[in-house]
Image 1 (spheres, helix red, strand yellow):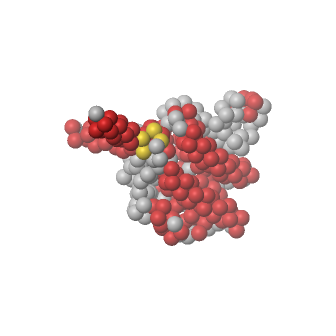
Image 2 (tube, rainbow, N blue to C red; image 1 turned 135 degrees about the vertical axis):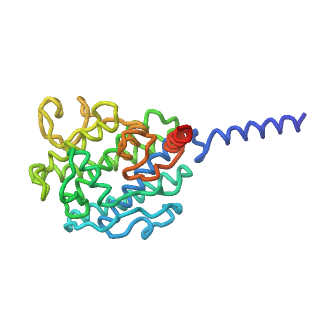
Image 3 (tube, one colour; image 1 turned 120 degrees about the vertical axis):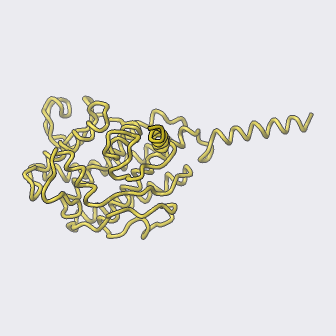
Amino acid sequence: MAFSISTTALITLFFLLRSCSGGGLPKSDVDLLEFPLNLEYLEADFFSWGALGHGIDHFEPNLTKGGPKPLGAKKAKLSPLIKDIIAQFAFQEFGHLRAIQETVPGFPRPLLNLSAASFAAVIDSAVGKTLEPPFDPYASDVNFLLASYLIPYVGLTGYVGANPKLKSSTSKRLVAGLLGVESGQDAVIRALLYQRAKFKVHPYSYTVAELTDKISNLRDKLGKNGTKDEGLIVKHAEGAGGKVAGNVLAGDKNSLAYDRTPEEILRIVYASGKETHPGGFYPKGASGNIAKSYLHHHHNNFKQV
C-alpha cells in the first residue's frame, strides 16, 4: 500500500512538473514571458551597436545562448548626448534579457537583420515609395531616433497585452518592471523626436512628425487590429483629453497605453502583415513556442501546396 501511494505521488509530481516550467510558472506564463525575448534581443543589439560599435556578443555573450550574430548592425554617427542615451538603453536591454532568462528557460537569439536596407524597406513601405538615397538609420541622430521609434513601442504594447493573461504574481511583477522601462525608453525617443518634429529629415521632403505618423499608420495597417499607434502630432480631438495636438506619448481616449497580441507584433516585425510569414527584422522568423507555432503552421501549409 505504501508503494502504491508513493507511486501515485510520483506520478502526480511528474505531471505537475510537465505542466509547469520556469521555476513552477504555468506553461502559458512561460510562453508569454519568452516571446518578448525576440524584441529584447533586437533592441539590445541595435542600441548597443548603434552607440558602442559592438553588440551583445562583445559585452555579455552568454545572453545570446549561442544564437547567430545579427546582420548589418554597425555603429551610428551620433552626437555625444544621443550616444550617451542610447548606450544607457543598450545596457538596460541587457538587464531585460538577463531578468527574463533568470525567470524562464528562454531560447537562443534568433537571426536578426539590422542592416540599413532592412530599416530602409520599412520606411519605404511607410511612405509608399522608394526613397533615394535609401534611408540609413546609422547616418545621423535623427535617423537613428526614427529607427528607434520603430522598436520599443511595439514591445511595450506587447507587455500591456500580455499582462492580463498572466497567472503568476512572479510573471506579472516581471512584466510590470519591463513595461516601466520600455515605456520610459519610448517616451525619451518620442520626446527627442518631438523636439525636432518640424525638422526636415535630410535629404527628403518629409518632416520628423510626418515620418512618425506614416510609421505609426504602417504598424496599424500591418497589425490588422484597429488603431493602436499614433504619431507625434495628431488632430486635437485625438490628443490627450481631446485638447491638444502634441502627442509626445501615445494612448487611447483616456491616455492608457494600447495593447497588442503576439500575433499582431509578429505581423509588424515581419513586415508582412502575417504572423505566419517571416521577414523584416527576422528573416528566419522569431523564436519561442508562440512564434514557432505560426512558423510550423506556415511550413505545413507550404508542404501541402
